[in-house]
Length: 414
Image (cartoon, rainbow, N blue to C red; front, side, top):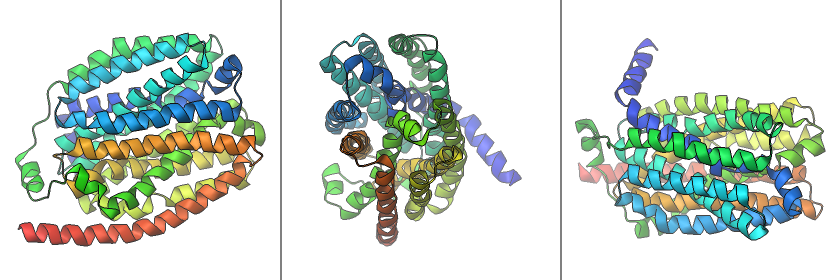
């Protein structure tokens, strides 16, 4: 244990600059994440006279459009320097935040959400994960798991901060403040951290040279890729659905908004701890061997949140959701370069990122549509639990298939 802690601290100290850059991108991607936007859901619906389903539809259209755009522009990371892409994304995300603050029509609201989703959840996260996938090989699991802590920090700290901020000021002022922070804090810090790319070590090069470098067209014809994507969709769909309807959930369960906001901290802490542990396991065993297990906590969490009514249920759900997030964040950051190589990682991962954004669009829109038509959110959570259970069994078969294929591939190259 002592040796492991020493090795981990040496890894942190020798790679602090690039790891910090990745964490900055994932943390500030929060401005375009569902939990952040949904914190303003009540005020937005009131200002624009939208129902749950109406706002969900606007959100879904904007997010689906951002997913389609992400497939096209995500491959830019294979040809343009990471820090340049990051800088452009931060500037455009800041503009989107300011546009949200000044929106007074549903059209401008939709446009602002489109840019928030594209450059926040989409490109900021995509850039961070591609950077870690390209710059690290032997310790990729650790690098990815550390980078994803930015998401958890955002999800743990910002909901509580927003509740406090909205108690003293208008929701539009909060978006203006987000825009200023992105330009004055996120932009210079990320430029400093990412402007010098990490040079792979000899060990990294030895590992990476043994693998086949897949083209995106080849990946899209590979059945295991689409099977794994069914797993990618679940945490994004379920997490964003719960985040988006957090106000509605608090009403039907008769929980205070403070309880719901505080539970995000539990999810964040759990995600960080589980994610860091998963990163260590990935570097030791591989991401594909951990693939079948990340949906188990989410299966239990959805069933629990559906049935139970006590306030502690939200905390328990967030603990289980955080466990799934922690494992999935590390696994899905590492498995694509592990299975398909790094040369075309930007193009390949743009499809995955778009799928995640698509799921996050479908979740609020679909669940909101069902809520408006009398299908309770609690009943929908039971269906989500069943989906996770079935997908988990599918991924067990897929993991075995990938393991056999990679063993044959590396055997033939040696």
